[in-house]
Image 1 (cartoon, rainbow, N blue to C red):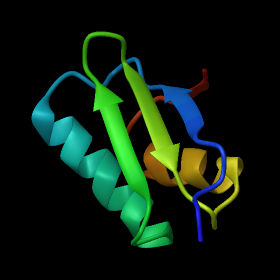
Image 2 (tube, rainbow, N blue to C red):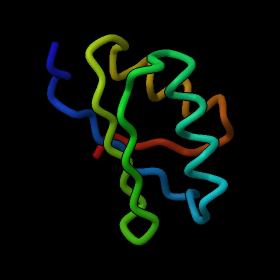
Image 3 (spheres, rainbow, N blue to C red):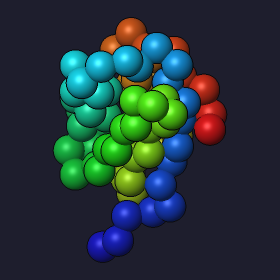
Image 4 (tube, rainbow, N blue to C red):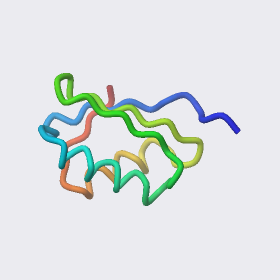
Length: 71
């Protein structure tokens, strides 16, 4: 089954590979099949998932210690 339209967030305090790994881990707790793509230069995180709602993804990233904004 194809993933739904990707969800995008700005994560202003994401600044290293370890940050990306933490965000990926938080998202994968909600959906182990989610595809997470992050760009440190633009601070943009794109998540392809067909299960969790956007607010659930946002809360998961925030609980991992990151600021999250709708992109």
